[in-house]
Length: 200
Image (cartoon, rainbow, N blue to C red; front, side, top):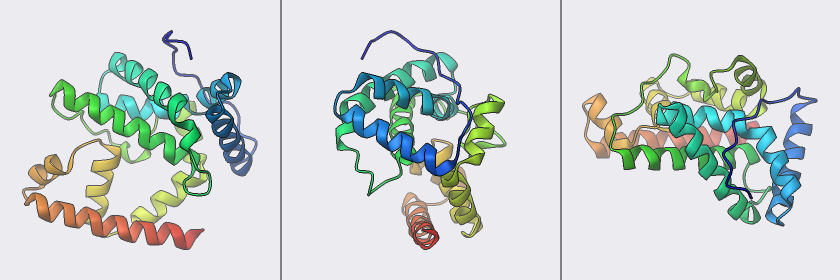
């Protein structure tokens, strides 16, 4: 892949959630076989959403753009390890973006980026990208299941996974021991997993 910095691409019209998911799976699998054209399709289909995650966690547009470039470099190298039967393609990509963004923020030793009112949407600030995200089946199912959790579990998971804070930062914010916060999040994630599995 080229090292040239690319701006986030806008998501195009959706022909259907199932078709979008199938197209992304196909493109990721082909990327794993070093198909550069398929890699470009992965970028076009997902860059707006992944940029939204990077921007929310990094808190700076320039930093988010740099991190996004690193995210796609990781995707290019690791696409061959993606297993469609074990994870949704967008979940796999979002995990890479979130982890790399958190790594960047920790390296900068900066304060956590402020949470926005709509932080639970993991969305780019641009309306088209935000609307596209809200239409995805994964987002709808995830937030329905999140709403079924206890308030403390729900808040902790949203803050950790969508706001980019570490467990220790959340524990400090809530004024509870780190072990208590880890236990709260772990129980919430188990309930969330069961809910998502039931929805399949």
